[in-house]
Image 1 (cartoon, rainbow, N blue to C red):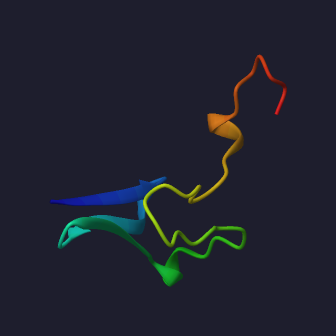
Image 2: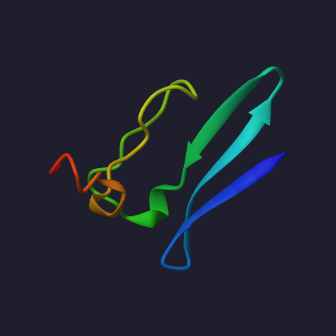
Length: 58
């Protein structure tokens, strides 16, 4: 299984299954200056104002 993550038509990362765990490979060429790297599938991997909860005001 492989999930390609794209932003505005530009591929920025791959999420794939490696043995019994999931791994995220960030693509350096994407050029995001504030991207967070994920060590495990449970960590926050990035921030976006588009995903902010409007009721919480973040």
